Image (tube, rainbow, N blue to C red; front, side, top):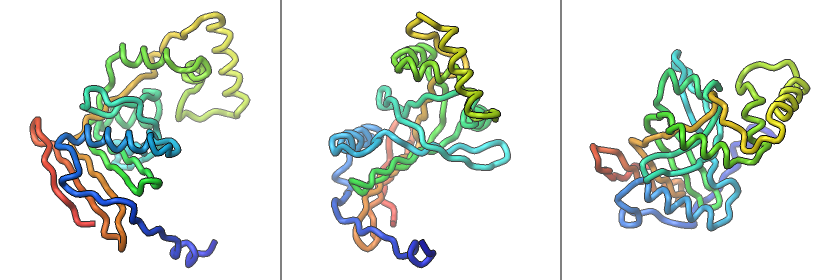
Amino acid sequence: MTDSQLAALRQTYSQRTLTEADVQPHAVRQFRTWLDEAIAARLEEPTAMTLATVNEAGQPAARVVLLKGLPNDEGFLFFTNYDSRKGQELATSPLAALTFFWPGLERQVRVEGRVEKAPEAVSTDYFQSRPRSSQIGAWASPQSQPIRSREELEQREQEVVQQFAGQQPLPRPPHWGGYLLRPQRIEFWQGRPSRLHDRIVFERVGLEWRLSRLAP
């Protein structure tokens, strides 16, 4: 495909509108409403979110992870290897951003906030609820570290299978667990015609959420 063909690709958004009267006064509860609608619409991977972090040199990095909870409507819960690149960057700078994109509803949500580790009991409960193969994978993979080959990874997997033969659930690896992003800013974006999209943003002020509209 040529650059001119790429530049000509566009989608007109016209399904819905978003007004200040449409949203709840609590940003995370409003997010939960939109997430429920995305799930009800049977969108593919509705809990997928882009997680952006930054290292100590200021270099940003982004990857897609899955949302696994909204505990007490106070934050966004996800799980990973603490020794991975994102884990190392969160240890250096606990500020991060999330983006959800639901093209089937012509919506996106942008979240910014501070990240903290989830309680160990939360991490253990979730880890041991995962399929056994996923538990084994978490032990076997030195996430984000160089490996020599696919065969090395599969060998590590077999070693873990043998190590924990007959044991279910597996213990949670000490290097694996949850993070909770506590939002300070959440933007709800609804696609509209002529690129005049609706953008409603919530910003945390103390214990309250302050709402405003942004130009598209």
